[in-house]
Amino acid sequence: MAQWTTGRVLEVNWWTPSLFSLRISANIQPFKAGQFTKLALQVGDKRIARAYSFVNSPQDPVLEFYLIEVPDGSLSEHLAQLKVGDEIMVEERANGFLTLDELPDADTLWMLSTGTAIGPFLSILAQGELWNRFKRVILVHGVRQNTDLTYQDRIKAVQKSFPQFQYVPAVTREQPEFGLSGRITNLLESGKLAKYCGYDTLPQSSHFMLCGNPQMVKDTTNLLINKGFNRHRRAQSGHITVEQYW
Image (cartoon, rainbow, N blue to C red; front, side, top):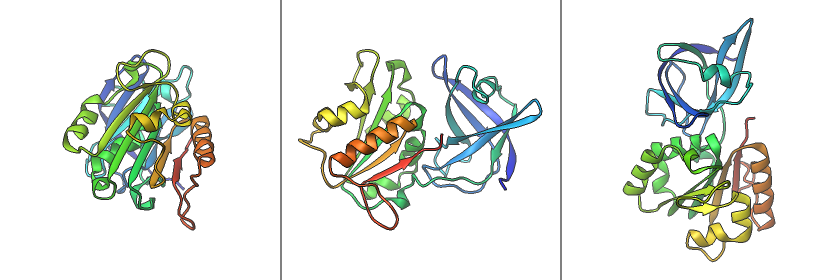
């Protein structure tokens, strides 16, 4: 049985008309960077809950979540109406295996995300443990429009502090202001992503962390398998770790 605690909204930040972040004070159990928990609201006579990744590092006592308001969404449209001081239910225990301690050693760590699924990677970057494990860390963020490229101040701060870090936006519906144009799958398949990052081909000493909508995760996984990479499992080391909690 899930155990819930009552949190309080400290801040609501709207990035675009549909993308927003919630910063919440809540007493939960310790979690690992890359994990997710559930947020819930009482809507009528039902408690509606959905899984959301932590954006904040485990060291930060203020919880942060990155969300999209989905038209007619059973929970998201209610979350979008929250104001500072409102109460929200937070599941006390985190879940998920998109964490550094689950990864094998590699030279290059690729973080491939779409939309709000950049959240767990921001948490991992903020925690800071990855810099001693990987020679290069490449964060790819697939979005529709340039305005969807959020959290730029945090990303630029990481770029400034860690020269082995590279950030690659992938914009699909307009010309990118910087980065690449197209879906992550197409950029991987064509070799454009590898070349943009300074490689002739995807290096074999790579590990890929995937977080996004189910179709993106499925298509990217299959593409990487076709390129000779394997799913990573505890029983058998591989190159691909996925998170999917839709």
